[in-house]
Length: 253
Ligand code: PGA
Image (tube, rainbow, N blue to C red):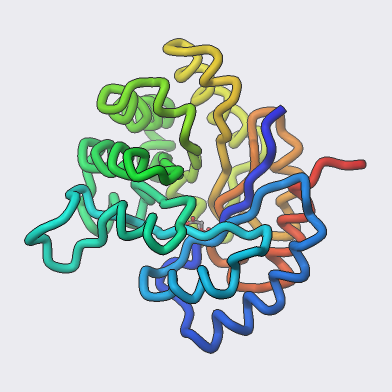
């Protein structure tokens, strides 16, 4: 039985003061949920604040990106070991905003994935098709290519220490959610793709859905057999919304 994970992706939002307010509301709201996992992925400068505020809570924290190099002359880079130093459990890898706006290729994403694992972090590998790709009927080719790049670089067993997030790019921040059936179909395809290489790894692999998940649609999405939680952007910045989404990831009594 896969335990569901709800991870907030704050993107480039927040301030010391607003984070404090948000977490003060979220921590007690999430505290009773012992049968799901919760995390927030925040901008680098706030990792110390997460360690201070979330240490001892049932909310883990992580970053939204990492550098593909270990250390040295890479101005502006933040390495996997630096994230581990701040107590990160997770790191997003290959979010579509990084792939699209910052030109990250499948190969660079695969290297970052490997670096995260080597530092003991759990990479949340983000994959998903653009609107043009969906309309052209190549959704499966796209997600297969994105997952295959990671398998080629780190081996399928590496996915045993990872999380995958399926995020159709056309559903991110647009208010357009994939239907539960559309999402389930792609999740099942992803699991099948991994199963072709290793059935055990595929069966245990958490596959999150992301793209306009909110309190009003999370329960329906999380009820699908291959949807193991969500990666939440906009709604993770609203304490009440995020708490309801987390509650819907708790198995019913
Ligand atoms: P959204 O973002 O929930 O605001 O659509 C999801 C994401 O980009 O991870």
